[in-house]
Image (cartoon, rainbow, N blue to C red; front, side, top):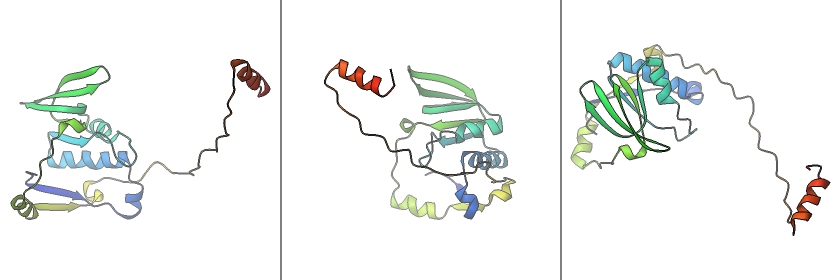
Length: 175
């Protein structure tokens, strides 16, 4: 909502199947350089593999400062004030632009599009690019050798007293 244009990066086939956080980070970094972006806002973590790596890798590839887990963001000239949630409460940091931010779920309050705005959005220009157009190699450095189910757990047993527990542990050679 409110964008003047969009960019769709088209990845398909084998490249799509092996796409990981590093490859997405390379694409984002290349786009940021091409578009001369000053601020990149990404989600906190992926819903498929729960990695929480793309934002940090993008910042590293660009050598830009990063604000992760942002729950509140305000711009002040060339600075970005980021309030982020940490284990002990909230932390406020100030970083210079260009910067990479990862958004916590509290950052956004959804706005619902009205029909006139949906119609306007259909007229917006969306450029299609391929990773090769950006000079990005999507070759994965990871190879899945195999996937195994965990071994079946043995059934447990109930004991009446601590003495019974100690005896069972001794019988099993655990004590």
